Length: 166
Image (cartoon, rainbow, N blue to C red; front, top):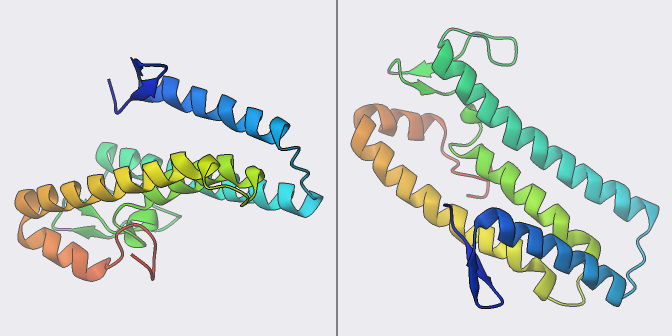
């Protein structure tokens, strides 16, 4: 079971807690009578779509690379560090770009609620904390596993999750 949460005093799985959270956001929107402009709806759908594409695209690139290390990434031969680490496509932009996609999708769930309260943003903030913690743990593990190759990869791809920021 993944990271879960408490709902009504009962420990629930991550999937169930996300379902409860999405239901809560629906209640929030109804209770607070939030009216969204067409531009806000389009922008939110764009945030969701970009997040989904980045999340699925990064994970697919990693999967394809593991199956066939010579398979093209974005139509070009992959750049590989030490024969083990993919440094092309999303993995050449940030070392954990799939986490960025995950965060954008989570943010898109909360954006329709506006900024009148921080409560609807609990899940994206929780996920940000979780993924930064996981990213740091992964970084330490990879540094130990890949040694010099990991240092070379980090020099080539300096950004961890969000390019030019972190």
